[in-house]
Amino acid sequence: MARIQIRLPSHFAFSTELMLYQSHMNYGGHLDNALLLTLVSEARVRFFQSLGYTELDIEGAGIVVSDAALQYRSEAFHGELMVVRMAASDVGRKGFDMVWSMTEQSSQREVARGKTGIVFFNYETRKTAPMPAAFRDKLAAFKAPSALALAEDEAYSIAA
Image 1 (cartoon, rainbow, N blue to C red):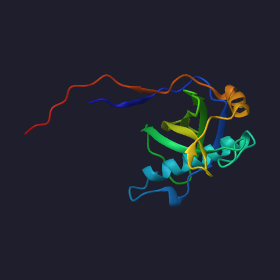
Image 2 (image 1 turned 90 degrees about the vertical axis):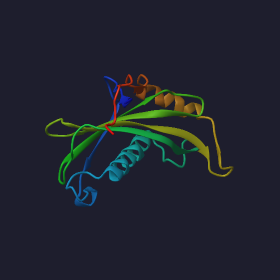
Image 3 (image 1 turned 180 degrees about the vertical axis):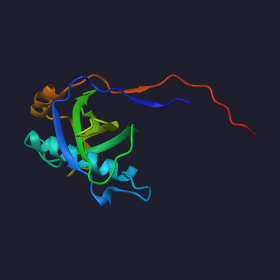
C-alpha cells in the first residue's frame, strides 16, 4: 500500500515551542490527532507573526489552508514541550507548502511531520489571489526542497 512520505529539509529557518496541555490529549492518554493540527496552526500563526503579518493581512492578502498531510512518528503526552520547526517549499504563483516537524524538546524524539498547503486569498472577492511580491522576497529565507513524496506501492492482500 502506498504511504505518504514527508521529506524534511536539513535546515528550518523558523521554530517555536508549544506545551502540551491535558486538553490536547485523547482517551488513550496521548496527543489527539485532530488537536495535532491545532498545534500546527498555532505554530503557523507564529511563523507569519515572525515576518510581521497576520493570516488575514499579508501585504493586503489573506491565506487559506488548501490541504494537509502528516505522518505520526511517536506518541506525545501531557506536559511535554514540543518544538515545531517550519520551512516553505514548492513556492508557486498563488501559494506554497509549509513543511513542518514536531519534536519533543528534551529527548529530541520526533512526534510528527507534515506539510500544509497555503493559498493566498482575497476575502472581499472570495477568490484566490497572487502571492504578494514583498512576501515572496521574505519567504526566500524559509525555502526548502519539495516535501511530499509517495512511497513505492507495496503489495498486500486481504485474507478472505
